[in-house]
Image 1 (cartoon, rainbow, N blue to C red):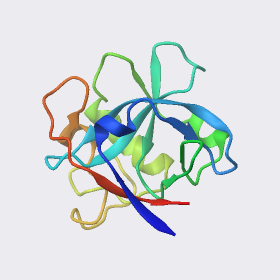
Image 2: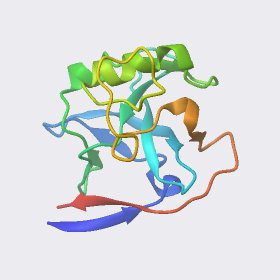
Image 3: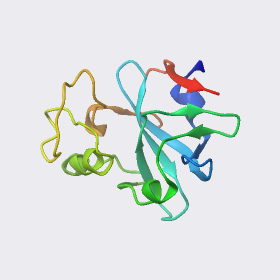
Image 4: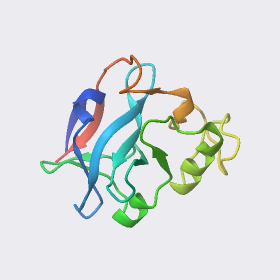
Length: 145
């Protein structure tokens, strides 16, 4: 399997697919760290106008059809969401980690499981929203078919 590097700018507008290859929606924005590496995708699924599903950048596979994640469509469309023009509320970040069964950094108080902050996704409140703030645009590596 090959590795491909994509920047946040290159990720915007790409189609997100579920684990079976079904289209979920378009990546409209991202939460990126100080190095410009995405941690969370904001995806317009079309199910709730004005809201984005918040999806972790974990185990993403780049295919010729789009970016594929290892979750079923039903899981992704039921994911904690975010209003289109608002940042994700800090008091709801524990929901993201618990919903996806991810370890959260210690600062995310409402999450059930916590892990070493160097090895977990950072919460949206600690990150830059790519479209609204001036963020670095450095590539992140993904597996590719």
